[in-house]
Every structure is written in C-alpha cells, then in structure tokens.
View 1 (cartoon, rainbow, N blue to C red):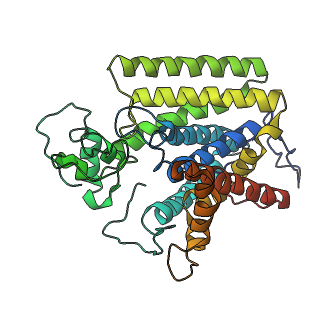
View 2: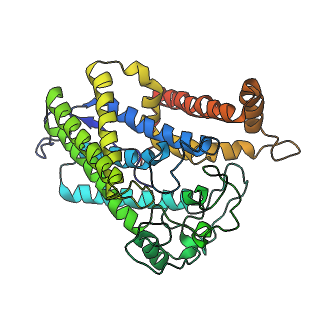
Length: 389
C-alpha cells in the first residue's frame, strides 16, 4: 500500500528556517484543494469498483488486456503520491531529515499493508480474523506449463514467473481478474464456475502488485513527482497547465498507439508501458481539470465530499475501502449472520425500491458508502481530526 496522506501545500518560494533565529516559524502556505479532491476521487473509486464491481463487471478490472474503470485507480493513486512527495519534501530543510522521514513512513506503510492486505482482515462478510503465515500475501499458483518464451499471455509472462519464483505460490493473490475471462468461464465477464475445458492457468494465483509490476509502476509515481515539481517551480497558472496538458496528451496518445498497433497491449496486471502512459496521461488531464475548476475558478464547493475524503484519505481507506467498518457492523446480527444492519439497508432501502440488485448495489455504494464517508470526513475536518502517517 503506497502512501495515501501527505502534505499537499505549496508556496512560490521555499522558506528555510534560519538556525540563528530561535522559535522561527514557517508561514502557513495555501493548500492546493485540487490535490485533496484528486486524492479523494481515487479513494472513492476504490470503494466503488471494489463494492460494486461484482454486479457491474464493466467497471471492475479487465480480465487481462484492456482497461476498465478499476484499472485507473492504482495509477491515479501512484500519480497523486508522486505529486504529494514533491510538495511534502520541499519544506524539509535537510537531506538527512528527509531520508529519515521517508524510511520511517515506508516502514509504517509496510506494516499497514501487511495488516490490511496480508490476510489479517477478512471483513466484511467473513467475520474472522487472522494471519496464516504460510499464505500471507507479501505484496499486496498452481505451477503452469508454458513451453514458450517472450509472450504476454497469462501462463507464459515473465511477471508471473518471477513472482512464483521469488514470492512462492502461496503468497500470491488468489483471485486474479483473469478468472472472469472467456477462456475460463462461460459467465464472462461475470464470475462463475470454470468451464470443463478451462486451461490450467485459470486456476492459478497471480500477483498484480508483484516484483516486476511494482518496478514498472514506479514510473507512474515518477510522472506524478514531475508534475509536483512543476507545481512547485512554475508560478503561473498558464505555464503549469501548458506543461501538464501537453505531457498528459502526449502520454495518452503514445499509450493508445502502442495498444492498438499491438506493439504493447494495455494490461494492468503486467503493468505494461502502454498502460503506464494511458493511465498517467489520464491522471494528468483529470488533475488539470480539477486544478482549473477548483484552484483557478474557485468552485471547490462542487467537490467538497471528495475534498474531505482526500484530507482524511488514510482513515476512509481503512474504514471503507478495506471494509473494516462494515465488518464491525456485520459482527452484530440477530439470529443469522446475514441479518445485519448493512444487509437490511441494502435490501430494503436500495434493492427493493429499485427492484434491481445491480442498480440497488450501485446506489448503495454511492450514497451509503461514498457519500456517507464524505460526510464523516467532513465532520472530522471540522473538528480538526486527521489520520496521518
């Protein structure tokens, strides 16, 4: 899990405290609202695709090649992390201090990543907790026969091979998106029982945040870091937007060209170069749009719930996107584990009213989860309470 919360303030000139003047305080810089809103959008998308993707597979992860809404979440997240790094570290007066801060935060993030993704929490539906050290997911298979090299297909790519070799079969993600592909199930793009003639790789785990894919995903963060430096060092809105938009369109066009010429297909699980270009370009353009609407035109009230979520992103991520709060609520039931407040709200307020499980679940996620946590984050902001790493 990469860093969610970071300082996103900026000022035109970097102010370094004078060690000869005691108790000198840095002036409080103006906060960049578009960064909070973009971060809040990313967390909201996490909640949406995780909790509604089962009923709406077109917004879930693409089974293999391609790019759905869910496939933009991680690159958007890494992009904004990169921007936040540039803004957070610019106010640290010394390199040793910056290094210590980075190392300490990295250790905390690793701890939370293992706690939330490694197997501890099985919320909200399975009311059990624990870590099987034999199967803990270190990064966030059935051994398959290949017989060929240089392929980007599910059974024969280097990403899966390296992860099986380094991480081991038990420590990889057990429910990869490729299990919804047409080669595996007749219910594609929905989940379903495997076909009788499904190839062996359909049963195999695959780690989308593995060794090689994590290395290539660093490029998404570096691109965000560059955009953050532009925000710090370019003082005029036109200069910033010109740089951001040109680079965003260039990345988008390059990635689309690579995909449709079959040179390098879009693939989130392999984190291909074309995927980095398309998603980073999209992130650049979406952020630029927020920057225009919010920080130039001053219409931030249109996105207040997203801004509040972005200011307390770690809290909302843990409570909502990881299902900790829903798991706690589901732990209180009457007679039957499915007779809980969460299921009652889903069934009687959303699904029955619209007479559609798909529409009901989508509206439940939008209003009872995303909007609810936006309001909670707004109350915490009003009280000055933030969860920072």
